[in-house]
Length: 328
Image (cartoon, rainbow, N blue to C red; front, side, top):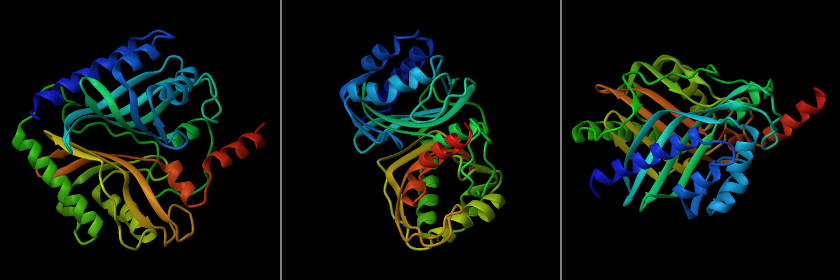
């Protein structure tokens, strides 16, 4: 493969997103099907999980989503393309936004404007999306409606840091030396993180921002990340960390990775307000990074927090139903 194919595929995805944003009620289904292979292999968060084929995707994911948010729009803040494992990938991070008009997957409608944080990575073949990994911050959607899980978070929830320098929506080929520099830095950081034997100051700018879903929150500096978030993970998951990536690539100053799971670790200490269960937690994670000079300056982390809490014995949807019944 050359740089040309990822660039072509990014243009296809950009056109796809734009067409969905411009579509009228009832048109989205045709747009999705025209950009998606009939046998797409789709992986999403709880409660969607794994879907096979575009018809299942429409019935289970898109149709309920568009019914609940009839004026749904997507705001993409990071968009990059690359290659991994003999495949061409396009990845995006940002927000869906729309009026929450009807109940959605058990979340009560609010009739209010709502933001839905997303991370998505897609493999394309012959101009069609054949595989997708998608994560949504569903806990944040619940909290925008007034629900509170009642568990402590190590960092500040609700912050949405923008790209630090310029635009994260790339539209042209990037310098290959810059791309390689970003990827090598990210890979060194990841391997050091899993081994737990490297100081994070080796990789991160002191004024970095580490942005993750509700349930964990956003650290606004390396100091805050080390003292709040990093210590929380190391204290709750004290043993060996394993995992792998289904895709990992860089483009210019930006990089992305995802794994199903990205991280595997035993819940053997107090973690996010939950006492140790001894359960093996399998993390669905998607990371986007921005590099500034020799350091990482931004990290947008997408995690299936509903699934992680479920693996620790906390049924978030059950707590939401109980909260809704009490408030009737």
